[in-house]
Picture 1 (cartoon, rainbow, N blue to C red):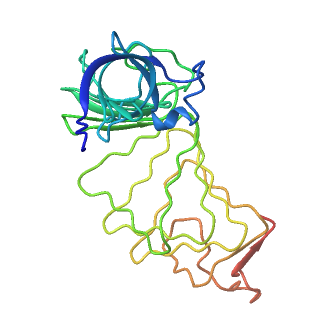
Picture 2: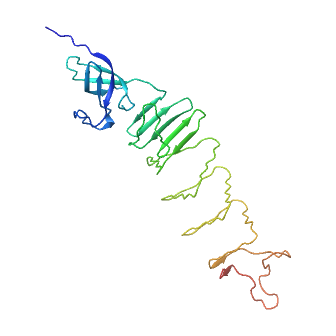
Picture 3: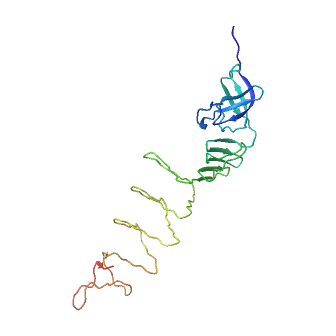
Length: 257
């Protein structure tokens, strides 16, 4: 004789998500296993989440329980019923939330206690927001790391403004190169220091100008090649030798700067 054993569906309640007295829950909460009860049918039976169930279970949640073995209830699955306006999922301190304004992907403290209709606070740890206006906001309580392959290229297109607030330090390990296809303007509101441990070269294809009320060159020695033609004014001597004695008046090296 063949006994037909079709699955039965019930409306039940989650009674435990961890530390159940029967010892049915043996895996980490990450796997969303739960103990469920169906009034008048059975109590405290181990149930596994349906494949589409991403939001973590909470004690007291109403769920649709499927008993695949109604005779012994040896294998049950559950699906959470939506009873609030939260769209997304929360699981072991991670959250994805979608609403009319934006999508939020974030991390929150795993020990946070929240109700099924609550939105855990992800502002204190890492979170990413993308709104309907096209804005993207990234917040990190600690470090942000971008890893790429050996030939990774990061491209920012469009007319963009990059703003860094606060006291910041940018450190580049290894050899680096800055190439600008158009003009480059560097403006500093306060003081500016440029220091090179080795040699420094400044080369311009056109004219170069230093505009300052006071220019001081220090460090030891200044070498200037070339010659000066007398113009009647200016700070350079245009007479190579003394007309009377023949002693040299000019040189290419200035020491003691």
